[in-house]
Image (cartoon, rainbow, N blue to C red; front, top):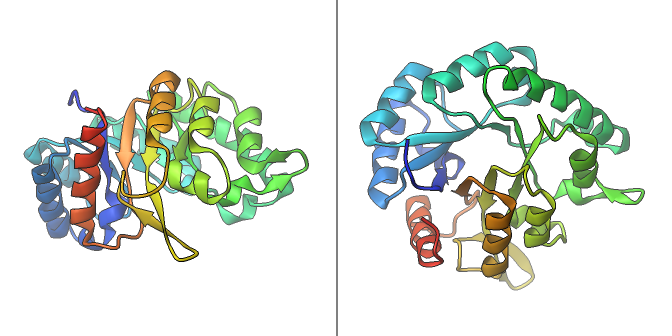
Length: 254
């Protein structure tokens, strides 16, 4: 385990984690940048035991994962087994399955995923939901993400707020972090910049998001892990992760 609270989301490096050999090389580079923790996501096939051996060998900690919702729902015992092996208590899903993305689906998913979260909690795990911007579509007087927040069981359903996607959907990232106080162990840090009228993902501190407000809200909300992600990089992905790491350290994160 590490005292650091900054992690790299490995989805950023998905083109470099397609084989176990790729994973080993990538983990070495991630550690050399300075990261001490990672969120596992977007990897090719790898045995859970082999992954543990690689991360342990580089002095890295798996702080969180992105796991397909179907796997969580159908085989929670296997999800628990893997996460206990890794010493990781934070499985999350990267997005809502398509069949729930409608007015009735949000209400249904809030209840069903709470039950999945309850089963995972029996193994010591804490379920989180990662947002994009489509959840900020309005259904009556609430956006979809607010339906999930208010109709799910707060004991078993956490929110992994993604700062870029909240902004992309017209929301206020700091306000949403505050709204999820006590239910946001994981926070995705991702900046937004512009090229003409086109929105682009950027390294933390290189775009237009209000980081002082976001980080203040995160501290007050009880965020455990600040996870740096950039789905699409304008530079080499390892360089982008390094820039973001240096910038968040300069902002006072440790």
